[in-house]
Image 1 (cartoon, rainbow, N blue to C red):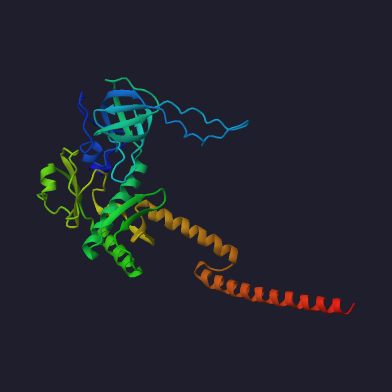
Image 2: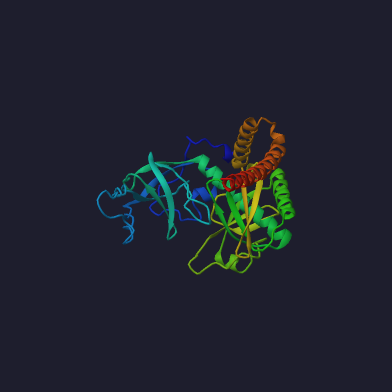
Length: 343
């Protein structure tokens, strides 16, 4: 099975002078490919970062002088398992020919790998993916597609934006109100889809078919593609749930998400941001939350299930103590006043 492919067994691709373009990269054809044997097509020094804006740099004696940026190179490969940043999903990281790759950018349709050392064009290299990072990013991205599809079908709410953070992610729904009951319903339906193991698969279509609605099941909210897109266009289908254009990596089945947990809603400019975690982040969050709860319970000398009761009790006592302190302070002032008058 593709999902069980070993990280030490690269997929072999034929050497080529013309690189595979973004949208049809191996990482987009098979999101579970962890390594590939390919060839270096080009290697160029990466432009140095722009100088600090005038007035921003500290002046005078003792001012810290920032170190010069380390040299980097942009490498184009025949094909790659490293996803270039796009569609809200961060780029992958990994190694190319044993050299660290910190990021990948889509520049005019070509995946440019940012490396810490140069590679000679024509050299055969193995590209190895940082799989834990990809698996986490892929889970959050796939969960966003799932949540977006459910919210659109159930309430007609479009997703106006989304963001993948280091700890939590969010999708922004085009509604000024999203109630706790809606949160519960959205979470429940998302996890039913996870348990169902809904198949997820990419397909490729012409720009005309996408723009003219000839792709079966394509989400009606999908916007027409700009003239700069020449195709073929990658489309992701969540079987029976959603079909939409997307360049990012996805799980092969919703079962790979393990679970989806909605955390809270934040209101922003007439919209609602729903914060969530999916995949391994759910287990990590549960573990860290339990550890903090256990530590707090130990410090307060109560079982974890009694924490709120102890908090309420301590809060009540704090109010009583504050009132008693104010009463004592007033009594002291009165006694001092009496003492002064008796002199």
